[in-house]
Length: 111
Length: 114
Image (tube, rainbow over the protein chains, first blue to last red):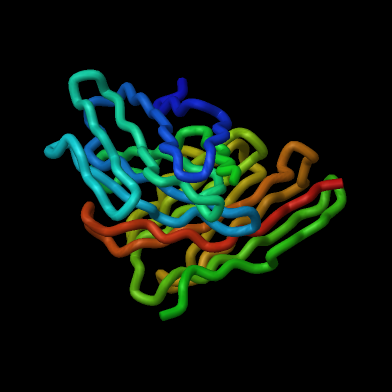
């Protein structure tokens, strides 16, 4: 049973465009939803995170939108740049339990 | 300060051999996690250590996998009698205790079983 479903698997976006990655979860006990960015040969690095008491969080060009009733959350990358090309993972956890990850989205930003 | 470090960065071993992978968490981080990352499969939770509590081993895929954490710091993941399906990147992460603290990952160990 996959607790966090992520889509799309891969995404190609033009430089300057908006990249959108979606995740859906099933466990209503989840109370923390981070997004991680991973470059080849590196470990995942925390990008931005949200808790279910807010519907949106913005940090620079990165925004998380959260829909508690639909049990969905998404990452929006505004003004996408070639340097944003990486694999992005959504995740979720409840309290101190281990993070449960989506399967990842490989983003390619082309000039 | 120093981040999470893992060694070796790459390991090639023959099927049937045992391997040990090491993780040095960030100093003071009481929670330590091991994940496995296979191609196209995301990150699979393996085991979780929190302070002096009994570890959460619920993600270990078989009894060939074990892990220990000595002195609440360094952790070793051991895979006995390796199989080709064990080939993956093994990632370690650590964080401070408490729900508001973030999890930091090491660079991983790429294990190849031939």
